[in-house]
Length: 467
Image (spheres, rainbow, N blue to C red):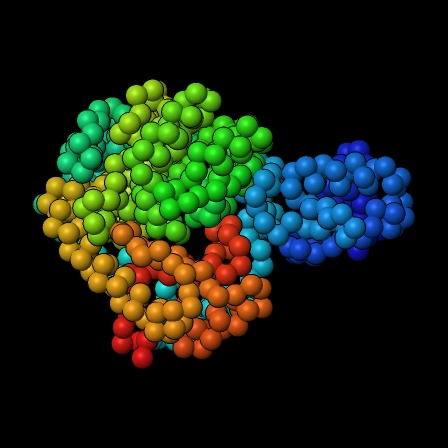
């Protein structure tokens, strides 16, 4: 494994060859997360290079957080993504380790359960159940008219104008926000919006802040763009100003990516006072904010402070991302970005060069939903989800006999809980017990949290399956 012949397969200076060899082993799965490397002396001997060359290579990989050095224990492959920088890989040759470890035994069992069992309670599924999706009918349009729309893809690269008008109306009705349609870019969902932002507004090596824990942690696209992730600590109102100040000064944060309303996975809602604090600090420090709003229409309590941070933005420092995937299903991939016109046009131009453009069909369905259905459907959806959340709480209290901590959800999709465990083995024992009952949950470690945290998506709670 560690020999001079293996090193000879790579180009460049010796220390770069050592770096490439280690990265190649990670990519191939020869080295796995948490594995200990041989000592510096042993590596130098086996590879026939000076120890100083090994030290230099390991220093660089440690600086990029690919490796972690533990005093008195040795050097290990990093098993987390906080602070890790992969090289930008728009050629899609990203080493798998940089964003996803090989499936654990538990994850393999989950996969098998989903494949083999018909009646499971999949509380790890964060998508809307099919029976809760609205039944949308296409407007009266012929196939020839649809083809004509598609032929105008160059003209419509910012999105269907009539859909943008409905989105502007939606923002006004929901939040009292006046949005110019020239500041709206239609996308094929939040993932595409994030991809365009990472490619158009950031560069490899940039540091970005996210909530800790956060669903952003699980996304591969940040490592694919060569960005470093840093976690901002949260309380019941979202990220704390103190943690943001500390991390941004230590790490020179360029952008802050937030999911402030019914945050995934914790379900917390950032107070309006906190939103204004965060916005003021970021403005002073010249930190841009990307705000992902996927759940604000799903509040159980009308007193919840669901106004976007964007509503308080007077300096054009917030990019707002909206989406319908949590309301009409992920298969109708439609989202939108609200940002200054020059940014919208720049990102639309990037998409135009790497993509064939947006399909007209999902845009027409989204327009139909926003024009005729969203108010009644979202009201019904809130009632259904609140009922399921209460049923889940009753089951949790009964199953764990009160020996579990959680925040009661006030909206959104998720309940975040902490198990009565202090080790990975104890957590795994409980997860396996649940799995034996065909109950699947998401582990907090998937979102960058510590052992013992779990996310339960109550939209898929089935009372009859829990008996």
